[in-house]
Length: 391
Image (cartoon, rainbow, N blue to C red):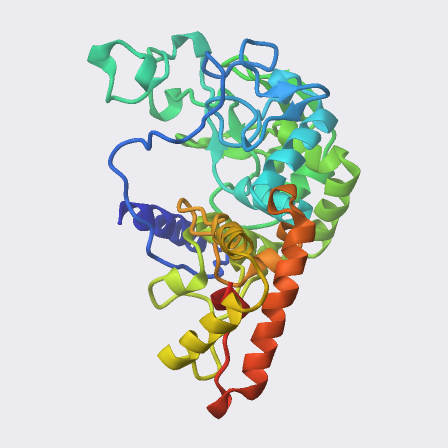
């Protein structure tokens, strides 16, 4: 699929620059039109700030569930800071919330930020007002051609995308520790890019710590950091992790490889769905691994016997159906997570969800577990029934 090819291309790019890749699993489907049931937020304006109509924030910057991006049109946080305010500590709060909703902890967040920003550059070569509206908001004759720009050629050295301008490291086509070398090796001052975006520049930097111009290698240019990058130094928790990675480059290398694999595979469901020869053998906790079947399964006669035991257990039809429904209803088709497999309804947090009526659920599960253990202890030939199947 194109979806697989795009991720595989990213892996090849990382490897070509000396980075480490944890593995690759294929099996992503392609879609040919936007899904109609995706909730993007209530904003009425592209990149609307939190003070605009339909804000996704309430109270003390509480982000609406289940959204993770901080603004309509962004995929993570605003690199200039919350609503464009260049405040690193406030940015750290946004980063932590957004990445937590992507199931990333602080170490994974630092690894992804620093690892991703070891490569490449930002593009903000000129006046941002010369960039047209988002493609779907453009004149009908311009739709389908991407973002239009009248700054020079509109591409190459004249590209304006994020509005920030510059590379993070002196060698942005090589995996190294340059991100942390720059972050901790210099003081930083707030500046403005040619596109008017707030970004940070190193103070008193020598030429060895500058990057080659992406379109004229004979020319050296200053590196930069975004406000979100500065959060990796200013937030106490992020700083501690960043300094650990700076002092232990192999730990950083492995952490990025694992976090990148998680980022690009977590929406694919159970590991059994991964395709290809490069699927890692290691089971990872975020894959919600379920033990392999290591016993004979029940047959039609056993199932009939278990049905009788269930109906004679004293549990009502409502008890049986509501428990089965609650167990299955967590399934989410978009990323193949949740569902009845694994009987996770007996574990936190699901067993304590108000919608599952915890007291009633505990009573029903206790009876079902008794039926399960009675069958498993007495069945011939080592046959067993899982609680997931019994539910």
